[in-house]
Length: 372
Image (tube, rainbow, N blue to C red):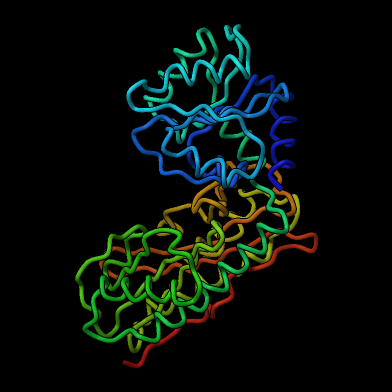
């Protein structure tokens, strides 16, 4: 698996005239090597050269045994200790992979992950190199999920379907957002998740008008809309689901906006096919809500890519005009948010197939009215 990914990376680097890609401990490193490291204060960089030389890994000596044991491909290791610091190890790794002449050569880095500390060390070790953003190149490699990845994401989706069902079943009047959040976390692990994809969001009543609400001690009341946004991690891959329920009978306005969001979710999923663009999917969902008179209250994109990260390309939004390939995975999550009233969001994980689109998450999308 990882050797195939390395070959595709090497081809992509050659096509774009990169001399190498230099990665931080983050999702791209895990994708290529299977290694996971916490990006602490000690410099840790992996160098993947385009010339076919064995990748080099500069890392703290304390992490060497773990890396040697778990690396999913052949690598040369350059450990350093705290007394000496990382600069010589990094210089040796650069020399062995790229040679002594780095002036004018393109080194790709992750603009969204690399810190100033690593950037300055790299500039010092590779004088005159042109450091450029490799995120688009890497995103294109990861966008199409292989069978092993799709199996992990399917399992993560099944876990979160089960967990959100069990979470919703425990809602009571007087329970707080934080209490339900703790229940959700427990149910994800009980259903087989390695952990959560992200800190779950429980937004109730007027708080549900905030798409990225921070959980509070607000107690649930009769008539509340409650947004539950959560995900499960399985073999490193993530799921991401949102459902909105109501405590006892909803108001006429709440029911109306729910039905619009449900129709928008259905419309977005219905148009998925090979070659469709993120902009076209966004428009399909957004048109439903706009036609219903609530276009100004749909205040975020329709979706985002999903895989090793909770947010990764492709983005389902206006201006995203790249045709999407079979194997691309992303969310469909339209919403309506009205200050003082509340909000509704319905989110599913989908994959593009040869036949069209397939929902990975399948928990009931109809409005759940909790008689509590």
